[in-house]
Length: 70
Image (tube, rainbow, N blue to C red; front, top):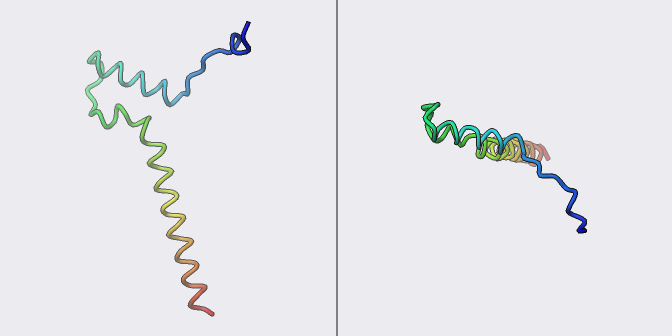
């Protein structure tokens, strides 16, 4: 018997929500734009990218002010 025989499959809540939205859209239960249907897949990376960009801008601004102060 292999070591992987007892492992169970788990699905991320984000993936499950995305699959539910896609199923509901294809079955005609929701009339949302495909942008909103696929939001669980792209929203989290988009928010992380925006947060990283804001943090980089703040760090750059602080570095500029510290350099000018010297």
